[in-house]
Image (tube, rainbow, N blue to C red; front, side, top):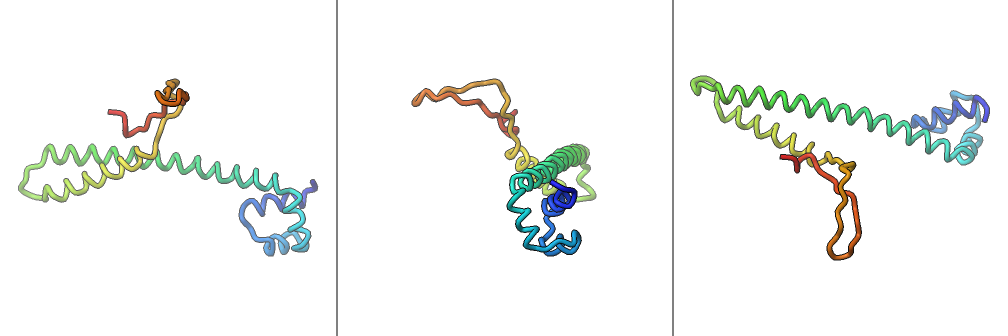
Length: 139
């Protein structure tokens, strides 16, 4: 694989169209299509790695959002605890609190731990499977 083909793979994996790549690399579109077929596996690997990196970044965003929601919930719980009932409405604080709890529950439902080291045996079939614990199942 030459340098131009490597550059093609990088551009194509990033989502650039054949037309734009043809202009940038000064290569005909039919040649690029041929390279796309020839290096299909490499291109798929590069796309996978790119998406895996994005997914990893998203996970950090979910973690940060979860932490931020917990901080907000703590502040609201403290405000409700210290509420003097003469100024702001308790209904507003309770509404925001319930919204945050709902958001936390949605995140928790999507988060699971698969490497528990526990095995479950189906009483009917006898099949064994790893036990997965969801975050929202933890009390």
